[in-house]
Length: 168
Figure 1 (spheres, one colour):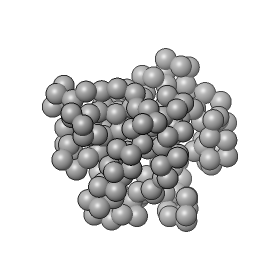
Figure 2 (cartoon, helix red, strand yellow; figure 1 turned 120 degrees about the horizontal axis):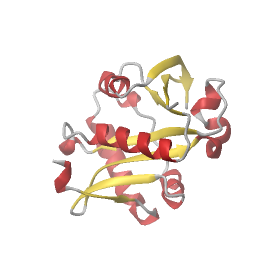
Figure 3 (cartoon, one colour; figure 1 turned 135 degrees about the vertical axis):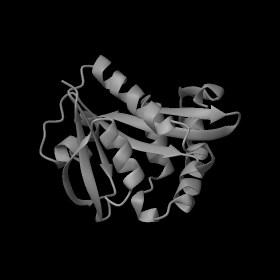
Figure 4 (cartoon, helix red, strand yellow; figure 1 turned 30 degrees about the vertical axis):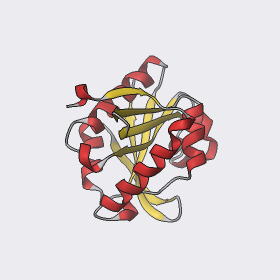
């Protein structure tokens, strides 16, 4: 249960745990192309800006997610990529759940938390990208009210669905 885990904002010193979780998660995926890995400095910068939150089980990072204001991402903002204005938008930039902690509701908890945070901050829409074949993530985001705006290459050319959730 999530109630048995400790939830808190992550900071730069948590970057090694984030990187370890990224490697573990990539190894456990049915298709590693579902996830585009980020360098440690990217995670550290998101932590520095207060955008990263995680669940801990003792010293084990069970899962984390990043919510970044669209305008901070500039031309990397998902709203920008689909031709929408970036003002008051948020990118659900990353989420990882340790394989041993799946099916506990952590993904849904992050979706609910980030929606509430975005609304409190005056957000008008939230965006994310998902590999089209990653049906568990597609289903989770669609269940939370996201819809696919388009599919196109992203990152290093991998096909991604760009998803949007209206908050107004």
